[in-house]
Amino acid sequence: MSFAIRDIRREDRPKWEPLWAGYLDFYNATLAPEITDATFARFLDPNSNLFALVAEREDGVLLGIVQCVLHDHGWSQKKFCYLEDLFVSAEARGAGVGRALIEAVYARADSNDWGRVYWLTHETNATARKLYDQVAKNSGFIQYRRP
Image (cartoon, rainbow, N blue to C red):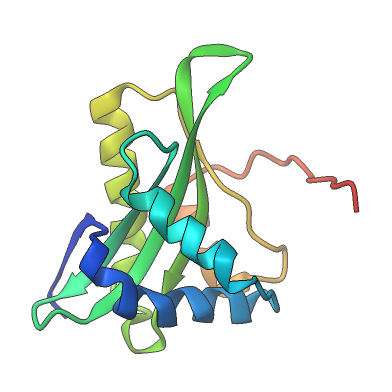
């Protein structure tokens, strides 16, 4: 399967939405439409700390998305990149799309001298964890949240 990784564009919104919905469905999450609207708008805002990349097939079909947050960190003078959301369409799974999206984030981190790229996944997400174990190191940290 041939595809390219690139920055998300305004005209991608109709093709991005099904991937975003698939990601939310996977995690049994729902968001108000205004949150989805604001999220997409931030990807296009050059002053936002959010950015998104897409994997696009030659015919224009979007196969996957990665959405990231760039932020300061108290232990480094360099920016850290939180890879917040990664989703690949069912038809493209196993074709290297997820790996390519992660590697594109790594390339951006390297070219901008960011200090770290990191992400979370649910412990039961065995399929994704097979890839993650190949491209990153599990830090062993456990996340806690205030409900």
